[in-house]
Image (cartoon, rainbow, N blue to C red; front, side, top):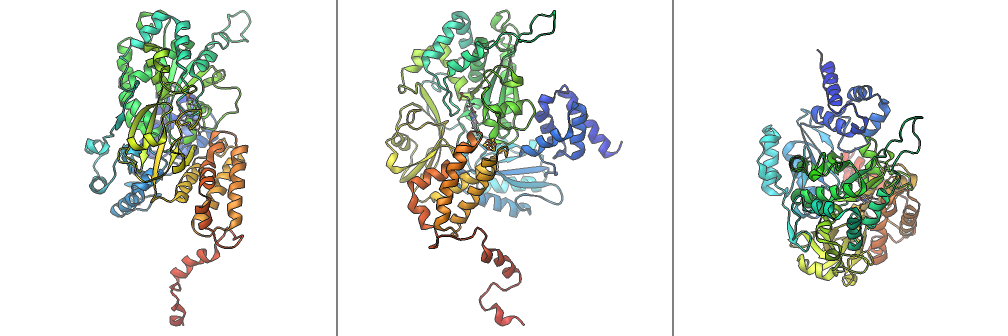
Length: 610
Ligand SMILES: Cc1cc2nc3c(=O)[nH]c(=O)nc-3n(C[C@H](O)[C@H](O)[C@H](O)COP(=O)(O)O)c2cc1C
Ligand code: SF4
């Protein structure tokens, strides 16, 4: 059997193992990538044939996800996090050092096929950066000796499975626990209470807790669950003479956690996964779902086996599967599905597309997932922390939760704190806490400002540290990045703007083109070529992208620029040239390389030319 035939046989086997289910396309492609280090056109063809779908559909999916590649990556594929906090901690030096030791350049696969290195968006390890991934597995604290160790292991061709475990050790860094982190639920306790109290009482508890979604938008959780429950029971159209089919419902846990600076879901999944699954199962009981998914970002691959272990244990204890806790008809199970490096898949409708094996392009809304979600069926999508809190509320009651917080933001919130502070990590605070209190607790000195809610949130200055974390004031999905006075506001905005341009899914023009234009303009200003006209254009374009984009990514992509421009106009002004306009193309800069190559970059070069 020739090599190609063998490859086709293996690929067809992978598709077979996934039950030839087109919804599992992303999982199939991830496996093909792992096996062959890329998804070749031939493999795409084989997958398409075996699934009975068009090859262009498979190709489109491969090209969409940054962890899939059509060109072979190295046996050791290194990705260095490009998040702002990793930058602050020296990620560029890490990459340069690794490149030197491995004889490679960023974005390249070495000729012998042994190693490739590239940058990637935030890996969710901002409290222990600079961080990276090797073959998808997270390696935190890439400093000094650890960089040497990684380079040695690769140069010695040591299989990844034989690398010292301590290289992959990810810390929890829980610094402050309140009512949720401090009182974990024992597996089964919340479910037992839900079954004993009955559905209406439990809906009432979730409602009285005032719980709002922890993924950022803050939608009322009880309402979401109720909308799903109250959706149609049976298909409106059914074949003549047959009973109407029941409409399935689904529960999806959004563990995509791609917002730079956010890592609290990582900690919940690492140490409180049982409680997250318990919350999902309570939700399934209330809305009548039989199937759940945990959509785990590809960067958290290292958690996958552990999560499967927790699920297996829950099945063994009768907390998942058929007849949960002995209740006839209470059947529910959870499947973990991995993403593949696309921030947009955190947006709930893009996530559902991804779960269905497609590119993560956000859907038109309405209809919302709660009525038309996975496979067009009613689907609850909630953040990891929302399910985690819901399990505690089910056991301890709505009043217990709502007794802290503010009028419109009940309970506590987990924050992922990182950047310029001596105690980065996870902090749990009742809503309403002030920024200055948080800065004191995390050991932040001489703070210039804080990015609240990640790049899609806002940058607040030191004049605003009396403001409160709450939906009524400063809302956040959990990201809290501290910057001290040594930092350059423009460089921060630049990093975030590059992030959005890279992560735009490309579906709608204002975001696809607008984020690139914003990036180019900011680069121009940052590099000292900006003029007053560019600043006005930056502001105009930013507002245009915000108001015309199709989904939350585009609608927030200009926030880093607009919020810093509003607070620090003088810092932008200082970078401008004293003319009103300068062309985007820098002729002198472009010719500099040619001058250098031809030895004409030094002033007196012409004297030595013949
Ligand atoms: C670009 C984008 C990325 C998002 N990423 C996440 C994410 O990683 N995790 C998350 O829970 N919600 C994310 N969201 C919000 C989800 O669309 C959705 O509102 C959330 O999962 C609902 O859960 P909740 O009600 O529990 O917050 C994102 C939204 C957008 C627009
Ligand atoms: S706003 Fe951006 S991310 Fe959202 S659909 Fe449009 S192109 Fe895609």
